[in-house]
Length: 317
Image (cartoon, rainbow, N blue to C red):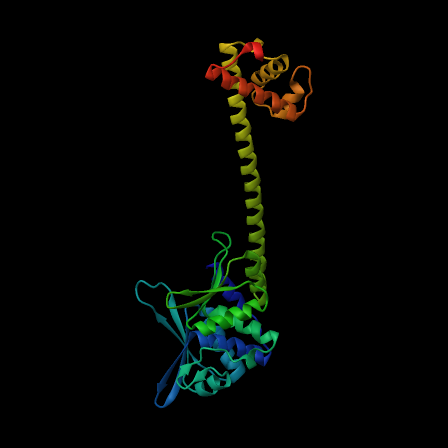
């Protein structure tokens, strides 16, 4: 089972006792997953989902808050589609439910949300929970980049979802996606806040545990990579210094250099792996500071360049 399925399973186990909250959740589920047909001069409402727990939730909400027992059907999708399709069908009482939730406009599902239903915190959270159950998805934080989204068929409704989420400072963003629109979150902290907001506490805690571990691993990796890069820089610099010292020794002799430079040159060749600070502690006549060692090595490199160019003058060293 995917992480998103685990989140939805947890959400479908939440108790809803407050009438406004139950209706708000049901409103989102019907608006986003519902289809309306006219059969024998009577509305037939079908709400479909690929998640069996969500289907049971819809069935339970209709029974609890409207006293209606709906039909629950399962259909197999085409060969290339693995998931079954679960349909909650309401043959009687559809008009009452749709009008009571202010979802219907003639024979069409309304694109916008009646703000009178979402005037307080509880119903807003419940509506977002229903929206996530209907079309939401969230990546597994162990294996993927952080991403949570809710899909809407209509742009106006997508704007409403985005506004609701940003009422809680979630930094939600929206974009067009294929045949519809999405509101999405990319920040791990905001995704955890959203999961907590809609009541998925256990899933949120699991998400946070994984996020903290990932962040720690990333921090350690950054530190290790930085240290490795620094070590490589030190090694490359030391290799160049030793090459230049040997060049001077082979062509003109180290004895042509000032005594202080000779001391640093001999110590560097003898201890190629040490840092500048350690080199300063080891040099004869030391210790000398790191900047002092660096200055002398820079002078040696300059003399090596002159030797390569044939401009080295031992008399003026």
